[in-house]
Image (cartoon, rainbow, N blue to C red):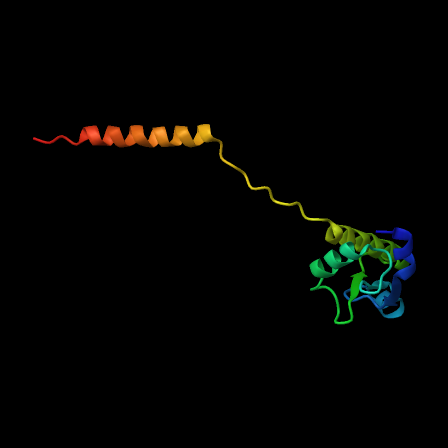
Length: 132
């Protein structure tokens, strides 16, 4: 993943923030929305891009565009910075290659011990059964 290319491919849009804030909310567009075209991006390897698309398929639009927003701060510049950090974090988590699960084998000594314990338990219960 190439961060410089990502910086160039990302588009920002400032919109009015929702929630309380008085007159400032009505006047100033502080909420920042980030738009990123995952399908046509040149910042990823092919396998990495496929992993990202499959993991983020619920967050992508029909055109393959990822939309993230931030309205935590009252400053548009701060929100822009925060949304880009969130974007990088989301992409890096989605691009991680999953670990391959290795099948674990039970050692023979452990199997042997378990069977011996079962045998001892059954003999103990058999000895309790007294017949006239």
